[in-house]
Length: 537
Image (tube, rainbow, N blue to C red):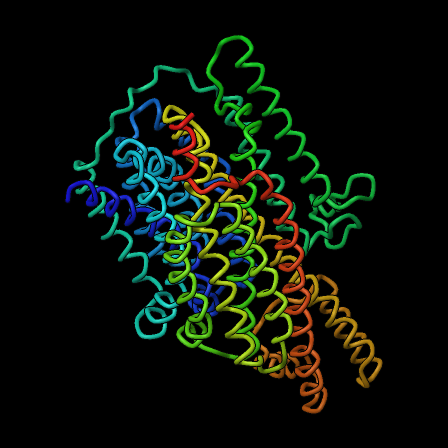
């Protein structure tokens, strides 16, 4: 009993870590009203929650090796609980950003790598495979349950209670941590500060640049940042491009630094030579793509359901419910299939289903959504994500020795959260950028009077914000338009929101197709058969 109590404790922590990535998405409109902020600000908070984890996850994994994995797990859980409490009490978006995006993120970087390493410490053989599958299923369940939990609590109580509950759960996790075995000896190594700086700043530059692309433009500058009234656009190129280029250069410098440290016998932040392991490289890449699709889907769908169709958080959660059910179900099915199917077959099946699900969701994108087709698309998306979740944890962790599990756990956290950050930033930027372009085109081709078109063009030259479609008429009337013009503008805005949703779904199709190329190194033999052959040899 004690053995499975350990995975329950670790699973509770994993559930909370993943839950935060989806639970707030269905509450976006409510939080925007409650804290008097914007959808763009919430997109930034969601993005930076996962980006904080991605940026310093390698440091968290290394601290687990130095402090001891169980101690790092407990310290991280306490920090995370503090962040959840701060978020629950936040009076404005700045405090929410501090508590959720920063403090919780910093706690998670200690907890997530420790979970993967402590599973390896506490389980062996088939039990270890089962334990990793359970953690994967718990992650899938958290992704699935997030919209329902967030929708129900936000509609009938307050979104703040979600974070209060997280404090309670993490307190239980800390109390139960004494049952967890930590057999791995602590390492006495010096953590290279320059490596931490290069990896963190490089990832922040890449993701922040992508996040700001909707405002600054990708290459040609749009609304560039200003200092003293002077637009910052070096050589006439958008700061988005410069930040992403600088981020790429810093990541390259980080890799070179790790090789340099190994060459002179010092401990690197991460052994980059592990990326020469085809199985690990493929597993991490597919994991990143999976979380990019998940984060993008969980950002754009709730925004459309709430801002265009006017659904409340609970109704939004129910619309996503088919994905929730299938994700949990096929996480379990995928674990069972692993006894007769090779991991690559299960992963590729999931990836192909994901492409079809995105295509079906694109076909469902009408003014009121084709409910049956939308539900089918969401169910298939959950099927695909469940199959992937059942495999990737064990694929990655089984590619290395027990000594390297903490490091790989950190890499899993990096790719998982970097994928989520990029998914939210990229799909969010596509959604908002497409909305601005479509709205401008709709206004230009409409029958509105020329002076009205000029007024609208002037007021939206910095881009179009995502606001409830039902509020557009009032905004138009306040700007001086008459009732007929306000009605026309509302129709244009609704059509623009629908067009931007379709473009975003197409973006998910592209990402899903690209992820197929990443899975070539996933094992092609069933795990049990592989061990039998090795024993016979």
